[in-house]
Length: 487
Ligand code: HEM
Image (tube, protein in one colour):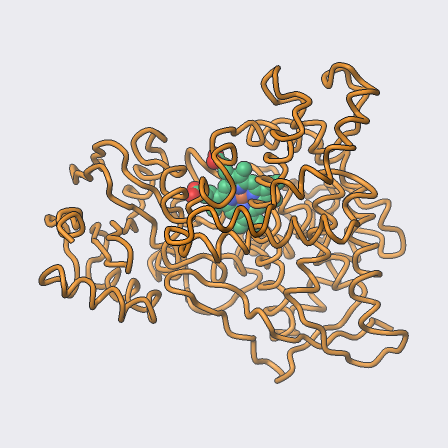
């Protein structure tokens, strides 16, 4: 209790704080309406930093552009993402020390994955198509009637397969046990993390994710080692496993334990984020059918419906309206009210002189920023063409030969563009290195969907409402969307 009172950062404003007991009471009532409570405080304090009482800790909340820049550019040994994640999710207990201590998967994503996007696209598209056929079409049957489909489950399975086609290749990416492990790992961690302070090492024993991943990868690693005594000689597959081997320190190149842990980590950051974003987009599309003909017409112009093997990174890059639609979905849905948590591990001073002491949690008010009327016109309205409108002013989208997605400051309005006003992929030091892959995969997924299916919500025009757990939001987990094949 003493620690809690001390860490409140008394010099910062905090609505409703009168004493330690008060703060507990507030934190419990606010937990049920965290988004509204944080938005209220953002309106009251404007661009000032303030503190917000959560059940387990105080959080200093950052909203103003300059504060966000200070925050996300701060060095890891001052405002630490790792320590915050450890504290919130208890990763050492849940998955083991090695999960956090090694980080060479980040290098593998930043260099190899991003450089190979054009090369891996045919495999990615192939798996997206096979995923739709195996997982969605099997639920629709052979007719052309509307059929309800549980969206989040269905598309998490397709995205998990497609991502893992690029991470581990065939046939493992279609193995049921492997896919279950890869897609459930992050939800298990995110769900159990907060409870694990009590449960200690129980989670590791019960779920044994690392051992299960090891069982799947070990034969692959042994086979590759036999084939190529050095992973860097270019004879291995062009997939994440090979890139991880390339980026690993010399003594881990072929270490199944270490590589299995990195592969868990890659799946941890890649699958639920992409599946959630896709599901949000699907809910918007199904509840606002006016976007279907717009996006379908653009997709028909950019890619060949009848031959997905011809789809290229450049062609998908020209789907500017689809890019904008996805960015708008991210702006309004999917971020938590508190986003990008950091723990101060040293004294930190914001550029306006505000000091943060070690042991303080800091996070951005992402929802309040994304819904700020001073930044976005009509911020609460969903405008799927909000970002493409700016890009199309400078380029004629009907003239695909002259369209230059890379011109001027075009990047700012792209799905992968980030700024202190657009935090969906983070920003600064820990900006998401997988966002180019995620963008490519999401575009393949949505382009294929709108070319082959019509979608609508059960109650026409009504989007399944997001689910909130404290300051974290998720797309409705059990909602069904109606699908019908395009005739
Ligand atoms: C739509 C999908 C995705 C979203 C919304 C997303 C979002 C984010 C955000 C917000 C961060 C920064 C977290 C922070 O600063 O606290 C982040 C970091 C990260 N993301 Fe993503 N991500 C997505 C997909 C992916 C994919 C597909 C990969 C891998 C292939 C990936 C790999 C990573 C990694 C490794 C980090 C940590 C970077 C570091 O610590 O420097 N992400 N992501």
